[in-house]
Length: 166
Image 1: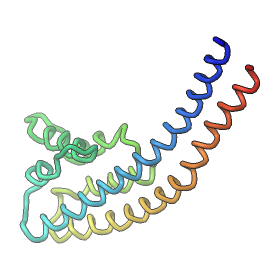
Image 2: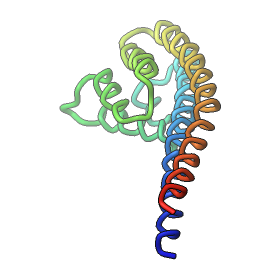
Image 3: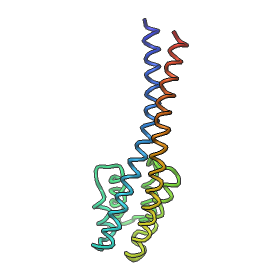
Image 4: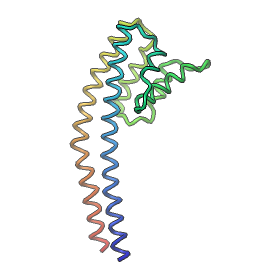
C-alpha cells in the first residue's frame, strides 16, 4: 500500500513538473502582452499628453508583473545617486521570464526613453511594440504547441514510473 502511494505521489510530481513548464510558457505570453500594452500607452502619453518619463513610469506601475517592473524603474529614478534610466531599465528586465530576443527588444525601448524628442521616442517605441507583438504571437504558438507536450511528457513519465515501481 505504501509503495502504491509513493508511486502515485511520484506520478503526480512528474505531472506537476510538466504543468510548471507549461506555466512558464503561459507566464511569458502574459508578460509580453503586458509590455505590449504598456508600450502602446507610452506612445500615446508621449505623443498626445507630453507626459514626462518619471510620471509615465508611475502611471504604468500596477499589480501586474510588468507594472512591478515599471514601479522599480520609477523608484530608481527617485534615488539622487541613480544610474541612467537605460541601466535601471536593463537591470529591471533581469529575471523576468523573457527570451533573449524579447529582452533585447525591450532594452531598446529603455535606450530611447528620455533621450530624444517625443516624436523620436514614439517612433522607436512603436517599432519595438510591433516587433514585440510578433514575438508574442510566436510565444503563443510555442505555448500552444509545447504546453501540451510538457503536460503529456510529465504525465507519461509519471505513468511509466508507476509501472516500473509497482
